Amino acid sequence: MNTRILVYLIILFSYIPFSSAYGSHMAGGNITYSYLGDTLISGNPFMKCEITLYLYQDCEVGVPDAIFQDNPAFLTLYDNSGNVVYTGDSVVYFDPAPGTGGSEVIENSTILSECGSISIPQVCLLRKKFLKTWYIPINDKSYTIVYQRCCRLSSLINITNSEETGVTFFCTIPAGNSNIRNTGAVFGEYPPQTLCRGYNVTINQSATDADGDSLTYELSPCYNGANGPDIKPSVASAPPYDALQYHPGYSFAEPMHATAHMSIDAQSGNLTVTPDKIGRYQVAIACREWRNGVNINTVFREFQFTVKDCNEIGITLYKPDAGQNHTVLAGDTLRLKGSGAVSYSWSPSRFLDNPMSAQPLGTFTEPGKYYYILQGISDSGCVATDTVLIQVLAHSTFAVPNAFTPDGDGINDLLIPIPLEGALIKSFSVYNKWGEVVYSNLSKSIVTVPQSAQIAWDGTFNGVRQPQGVYVWKIEYTDSNGIPRAQAGNVTLFH
Image (tube, rainbow, N blue to C red; front, side):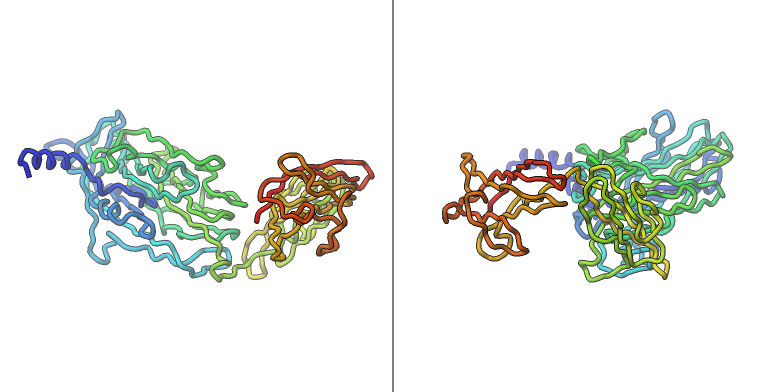
């Protein structure tokens, strides 16, 4: 090979830092610190602090090479004027020795619920612990410790472009000349990785504080970072930091699709949620440290929840029964029929005479769709929820499927209009895309179908199978009050 070309290639590849480090793998993390005392260096006062960084990496679907490239980590220290403070080497390695906690798989093989713990297959989570000792100048400046890295998992359903989005973990050291010496709060056990769809869970996410500071908890944004070409910056960007972009319907305060919205108790740190949609979600919490009424530091923790259908994987958890869905007319009364609990609570309470009873009577005065959540408590203290839908119609109507498959297999072969709440059909017609009538109960003999249905289209016209496509149907009928009405819609015929 030409020597000049070889030199060129060597130079070219030397300017592609950490190209193999790119890849989705970051599941969460947090950063905190311990104050170890004051000291003098060359006659100048410094605080000796030990920085602790935890990284949580997905070893189930994460990119292995990206996980490997997380070691070493790069930390950056900024003062409150936005200046980088050079206090020594910012490179930090984790300790791989067994038993040190430097790198270990989190074998959290349980799902927590109000009924106890249930073992199921988990996602794979790898934790790396990094420690770094820094000497930080004592002056009128406060400091921010920062770590940034790309990228998050691509399968997060609450985050926009998550596979192209990195993390920013940070915390604050108060100014030294304020006579405040602080050790950051330390979170306890990492939350379970998997939750069961439809089951209430309460997870303790409290922290401890060596200084005895008062702690409060809240849901927090996840913070963005390392999204550009430098996916593992040796010097992190300066604060303040931007929150992640959430998909519509999600936010840091509503990070999961849930029947009982996620919340965290400000005093206890108990995180509560009833997830109702399968998928992976990114969640973050903040622990604020208060001393003499002043917030002197905030530590953040990011983590992921994977929501699974526990019944599908052979696990049965306690669940009350809210009864069957119903359709009624405006002004009707209907008694909800909860069962399977010793204590009941229905929400919302609108239209119900007693939301604390098992079978409250509802008087539904306004049309609409109303979802009622029943929270039940079993005799052993298990707490879970179930949901029932009450659809309130302004008048009688018909339910017509939006697709059918007239292929003779005995399943979904007929298009049948189903009367709701006393509707009486007068005519039912189906039209092709050219507006031609391909079926009318006024011109064709009645087809015998299951469940005593009087009118149905079998997908033929004059005995000839009609082509696959979209057809228009129209119904003329009288409602339960004898008022003439009409209804129309589309149906897709599949072969």
